[in-house]
Length: 69
Image 1 (tube, rainbow, N blue to C red):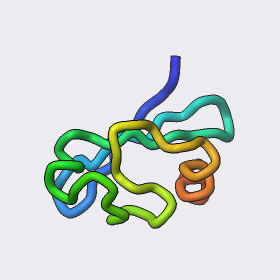
Image 2: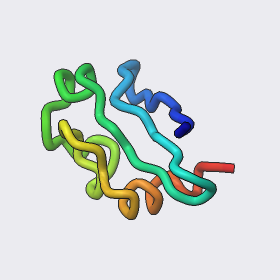
Image 3: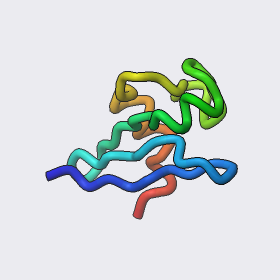
C-alpha cells in the first residue's frame, strides 16, 4: 500500500504526496486546494499545477525528492 502525506500551504491542505516505492512519489491535488487557488494554479511549483489528475512521478519526485528522508 502507498504511503501518503498531506501537503499544507497557507493554512489549506492543497493535496497529498503519495510515495510509490523507495524513490518515487506523485502529488494529488485536493478539492480544497483547487477551490482556493484554482485549477491549473502553480502555487506549489511550476511543474506541479493543481488539477484533478495526479502529477507525473517524474515531476513530483523532482520537487519532493529533496524533502524526503
